[in-house]
Amino acid sequence: MAKSRRTRQLPEVAPQPRTTNRWLLVGVVLLVLLAMLILALTRPKLAPKETVLPEQVATKRYASAPPMTIDVKKHYTATVEMAKGGKFEIQLFPDKAPITVNSFVFLARDGYFDGVTFHRVLDGFMAQGGDPTGTGRGGPGYQFVNEDSDLKFDKAGVVAMANAGRNTNGSQFFITFAPQSYLNGGYTIFGQVVSGMDVVNGLRRRDPDDRPTYNGDAIRTITIQEK
Image (tube, rainbow, N blue to C red; front, side):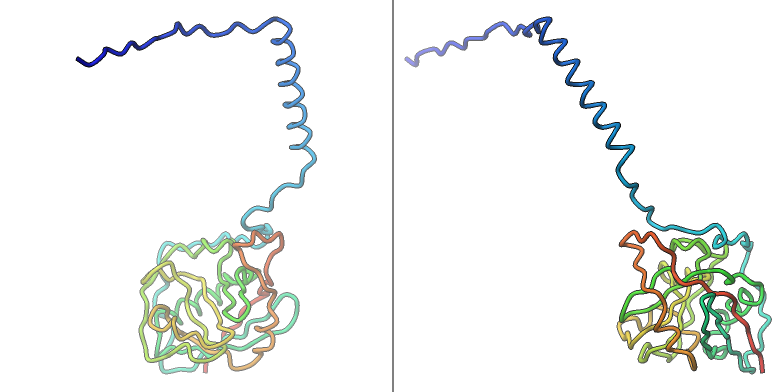
């Protein structure tokens, strides 16, 4: 016959702190709180994910994409003048990406890009701009579809739309520093830098993931030529 096991349960009584220990505990807590307050007031504040100057925030947003106003049979170039000096020229491809070029031309002529920075510039990869908020989340208030073509990311200076997935194009665009073949088919190419690539290469490097405390280089204005 198996022996029965006795389980002994003791009464659980919470210990009562002594009066002296209680006042000692209160003093320790007050000292800790004081130290935390001093630390909070004296330590440097962390930089926000993006630091944006007030003049970089565009007030223009549009209810819908612009109507088609370009002539796809004509030649269009965009001269990008930088606020710090220097400029570069982009040959646009209206025959390959008419919707994209039409939107870019419309925004440039309306002054949308004036003061906007290249907020994401990664060495050896690309320079991304076109977002008035400088956060990578801004846009003109409308989106449009991808336009596929035979153009490839096979050289430096390729200009294409940035997106958050297919058919989510807005105002953000990027320029490659080198061939990026793995991007083929995912982004609408609508231009090529034909002069001033040294200015593009000289754009201030800036990775938003590093929480920079400075802004990227700003565009003074973009001028469109039509021939």
